[in-house]
Image 1: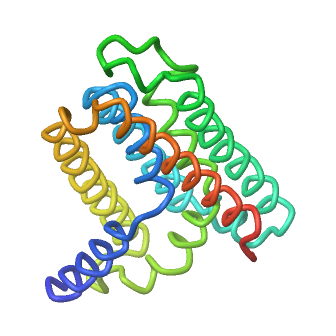
Image 2 (image 1 turned 30 degrees about the vertical axis):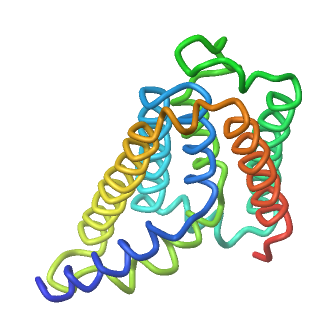
Length: 206
């Protein structure tokens, strides 16, 4: 069972480190509002994973994964939110908001935690991932529910550690990212990336 757990941990670690919408949302918040909001965003993302984990263990995520209509509705809601964040970043750079430091920048709409949570909980790929892949990785020595719950907790912990470390790396390079030209460029890049992920989510096949 221990070997199976290590193998599952390796797969989850690789999948966690692959850049995706979570990293883009985290980058936007950390560069715009500072490392504290960056970590709050990571906390929201982690909470979103745990919410999906609970739904998976009780079987509701399987219903979503099997329903084309439900999947499409959640997919479009998530894509719209990512696109909104991307447009917001582009608008901020156009208005010159990058001139302000993270400490003095006015608060953005909604909390950092909610940004992370909403972007994650409206990603139906997590439901498909949890109901399709996790059962194949669960250690055979545990009940299916216990094995799934263990892997969900492991995935949430890896996500928090990985994205949290990423936020702190950004914080250590704060002086560089606070340069107006760099801030404008990063706003534009993250804005385009978020819109791109929104399009990718919206056009993803069930």
